[in-house]
Image (cartoon, rainbow over all chains, first blue to last red; front, side, top):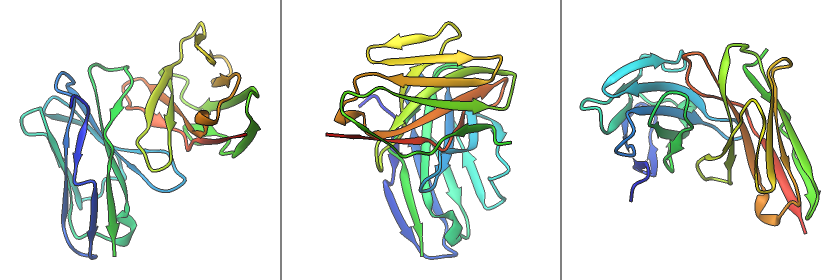
Length: 113
Length: 109
């Protein structure tokens, strides 16, 4: 499979717990993006990487959120002390160069009880 | 003013109809434009890029008007399988892609 892979696909957790999502981009793509999407809304930008460098973070990304891409390949998004408002679909996408369209993974759906 | 605005719809059209969606953007420095399609509970998928001269892909035509800062998507001869949410996407300068909320289309038999 040469697409963008995300794991887990679904996560149900209790408020206050930490969760981590993983994204494996298309191997030739050096740009990796994280977006969040809630019902009835378009995807909202969270952060993106070019290789291992995190180039931009949205103000939506509070101190409880952290993302890494240590070797410029896969990336992780961690949410600490989850809140009910964190319930959303977390989408990862990758692209080969700036200005090109993104290829999305199937997403990781988070439900915080 | 939001960065990217779309009419949320829904647009309910009969099979075979022609339907058009518009999208406005606020950043005049925007350089790249796309339409994405998103099916219910699925990830967005790139439908087509939008070029300054306008471009066509089968039944789909995209146009860009930089002076008025809007892009459009025209779907001719609508099929049931065209039912989805269509997301307008804009990239300005060095900023990542910004998505609109999407326009929902239902094609009815």
